[in-house]
Image 1: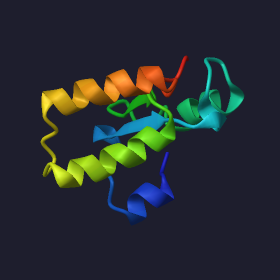
Image 2: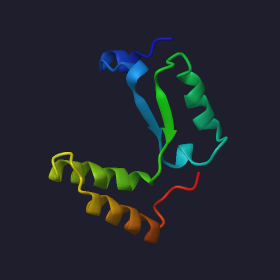
Image 3: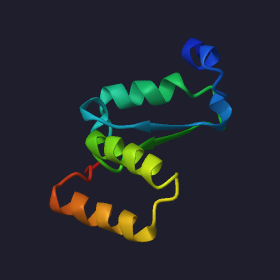
Length: 93
């Protein structure tokens, strides 16, 4: 199976992690999640996971990644986890 987007971006899907996040992929057994997983069955090295946090957290993490030069201190990671629990931003899947 050939994935045209990945090919255009020169992404090797056999060494790739796809994180399913957002309302369309929330919950086990949801049809969109199942279809995405089936769509990439031809790539045995691809890892497909469910997002731990709501998408807004990922946006914040991208900014922090840049600020800390891709080396988030453990204290920052723990604080993010703590705040996400308080604000109900951890996905229940």
